[in-house]
Length: 417
Image 1 (cartoon, rainbow, N blue to C red):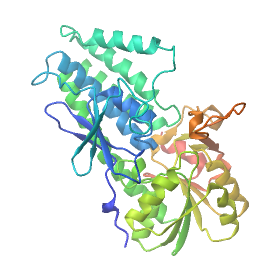
Image 2 (image 1 turned 180 degrees about the vertical axis):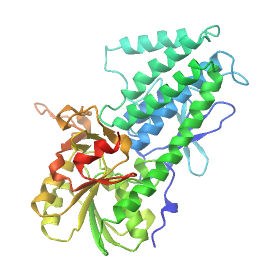
Image 3 (image 1 turned 45 degrees about the vertical axis):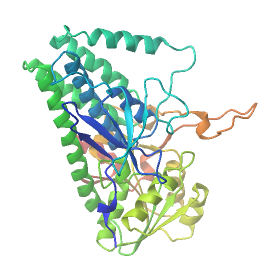
Image 4 (image 1 turned 120 degrees about the horizontal axis):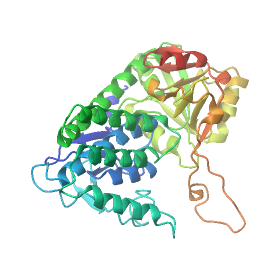
């Protein structure tokens, strides 16, 4: 029996004594442990995005908007605009289990490599200029006498650039950050005080969480209509509830179809090198009650050749104007095999993932991650290439499923106009 209510919430903005606190399900600890990273520090949110504590394009977009809101609250608190002083633990992220018991604090301003997995990444040795700039900027904007609107917006814009740059491929992050900054500019221009702006940004974050879940459920219904009764689906990476506010994009299609009795089984690629399929998708589907079989990435082509798969459904991190899609590394190989064996390849993503300013996939920036993800123990004379994403050409994609309907790849950019 499929029941998505068994799934944990990925992101929430909580009230915490006057200053909001962002709660992020720590996905580096899944499936062994369900724990939340709770923080009121926007820098810790950046570290969480970089370190995959929160991941998935829609989810990191929401986290990015929340980080802008937390920066606004930091400014307000430092200028005496909140009830009480700035909380002494503001710069500390506490990993809190679902039972509510506090785990050891994770101080992301003095990061230790032995802390929770990938909680933050220190600057390379000798590269302390960004840290000096950040410290100088922080001292400047935390001057209690510096509450003028221009300085307030400058502090948000500075933080926004750092937040948006945390992961360059997923356009949802920069889109959400810009949405928050635009709201701050509008309200400040209308004469709103920094505290009112901070409250509005917190409300915007909560609204984005609700909007994302609603869009995912609508998207899922559109996608389920494409699948035959008794369908078997192949998916790659994790584009599920864990990658969004709730319900998911690609897996949202699966859940909607399963709720209608259409899904027989889902095959999930393990998704090397980080293993989002093995650690997250398989866990999530089993938790929701959807039959799931895990396969190695190099088994996907054989599975598609066997005729056992009715459709491939994946998510997206950025969709170019021509319909090319950037998604987790390995997606392109699955798409090529699906085309060879006549299996329809669908992409499910919100319209916020469409970047009409990028003409085609060659212009999408591809994040390259640490070689240790591929080769934990370095080998002398061995280099590692570790792109986090690849680009699937539009001609390999049967349709793009969005909250606004189902489109051919060439139509999807016009749907955003």
